[in-house]
Length: 266
Image (tube, rainbow, N blue to C red; front, side, top):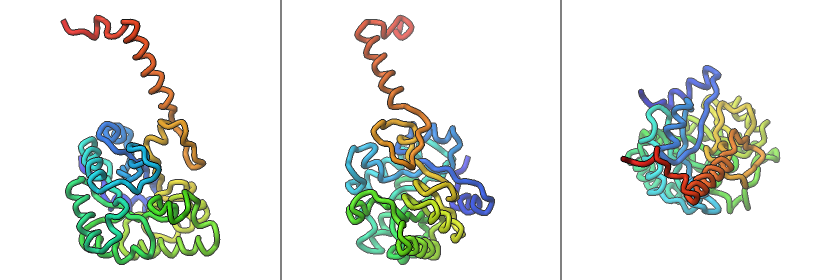
């Protein structure tokens, strides 16, 4: 079984076949994602919030992303794997970005990297793609810019802001991106960007007209009952299931019902 490639992404748009992505961070979930026939996994810097408990993604390091990429790569064989470039690993210089992105691919076992930003990243993306590093772009609500935005705010609402995102998307495509995440933008704008580009768009909080969708696995499974943004549909209520299972375990241990004879070696 071989990995799905960047070509699979391009063909999906040509064939009008929706791409399905999730974000996950470990081998166990990667194995289950593969069993569900999901196309691609993003090992996102969102692990800073979901796994590490930070308020935002900025503290995540390259070593931490590589660690989680390796875990995911060991857990599945078919999904296309994309590793996030953390904040501070590509902004200083083109050489820094090339060194860190090639390290992420070599040590993390991913097939592509993801970088946030628009026209200001075009030269960098061109340098990476010509060096053989496939790049997924990311526009709209880019979490690494949370302080610059003044919080997690929908982007592209005004005509000027929408036009800027459209021009950014064209620039990223021209620079060599094979796909583009659109996060937290109005559905009409996402539809316009998707129609304009020849590369596929993957939306999160960007409406139904993108070429694919991505959600954080923990979110769609309902593992955090406190997190309920408008864009999220919870396909399960696993936070309750996990708490109920742990409570049952606690009850049986304290009552002496576990371990029973069937769970003991003889």
